[in-house]
Length: 100
Image 1 (cartoon, one colour):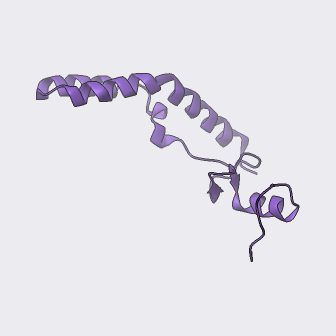
Image 2 (cartoon, rainbow, N blue to C red):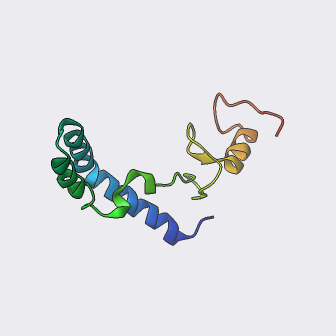
């Protein structure tokens, strides 16, 4: 199980990313439309004004049940370890056992 503080940090980053998503997207569209270099620098400064943790690249996918940050399957939102246990217990419909 991941530490509670790390899980809370990820939740905080997710909230910040959702809050500043539209600002980032609009700034990027403006940069692509503008042709003068000085205007691009000005808009780029606006793009750097939101907090660092609001950037989508700082988010890390975690297991839904355990909070484990590695070996996650996007389709299920689970880590490989938990996914394997759930498939063996027939808790995931449509998933078939493999030679794990």
